[in-house]
Image 1 (cartoon, one colour):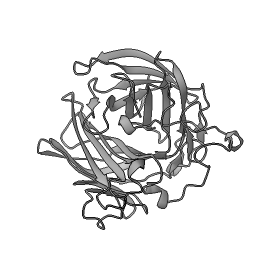
Image 2 (tube, helix red, strand yellow; image 1 turned 90 degrees about the vertical axis):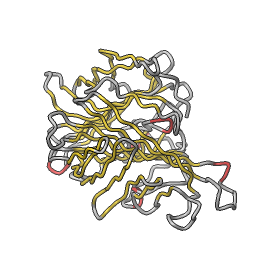
Image 3 (spheres, helix red, strand yellow; image 1 turned 60 degrees about the horizontal axis):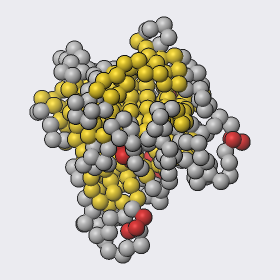
Image 4 (tube, helix red, strand yellow; image 1 turned 45 degrees about the vertical axis):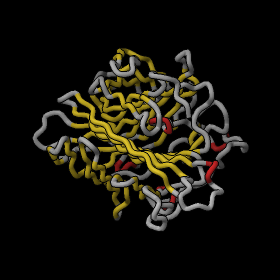
Length: 370
């Protein structure tokens, strides 16, 4: 859920029943509408669009992992300024490619100001986000709706992505119909939806060598916006978003305190019915348990990350294994944090490989400050 980076957030649970929502929550329960809610919400403090995926590529035995994230952060102290140079919003972007066979992570990041005006209206802007539909631009990086599909264009320093994402299932509303709980206090909530099982086409280039994506490439989109991210006792979180081979979608997370104990946990599971018509189940507090099995120590940050977990959920017990140990990201030039985020595999309780997705771990190099 907020996954990710110093503006990150993690998928978080709301409750299963509408009656469980206290009237004092900072964000009111409402019906998310599309395409409007696929666009930006600059009246809220924090927002991000988060794409992760597994790419089968032509001529390569081992696949690639990829991640593209755009963040928006509202700057409250500049909202009343009249100058067109006022940075009312900051936009950040992260992108990464995991070369599984080469066991290497390629990473890049961007940061720019946005006045909050529509794209093209303010010549001082180097970034913008549409309020009508998904269209986030940060200099030469972009994520836009093109017809019914999403397109990401990421010309990074040592790699590039030109990817198109086609929905194969309906939107998956997290929490209580899109209002997602993120901590033990009522105000720690967000609006949050996912688009699992996205069909991916296009290409990824690494150091000028272009690799076309083959069929079977699949991605996951999270879009989340909120007024408050973390409980003050939370130092970080562990999160997974898994596309299961049978069409199901699994989200699970825990927020940790400084002792490593679960301060909050949650997630959801939607079974793989035809066209995403399966049953959705929202996990209640205490139904998710992360148990580390193996750790990897970073030479750069000296942090130790659990790169293999057993994750207990109401759907099943899953073994989550990183496909490359070193998928640590240094985003101190943009969001100010060091965290681990990368491609992983999911094995069920029968030790059968049942899916792939992304694992994110924050707060191991240092407590996350949001």
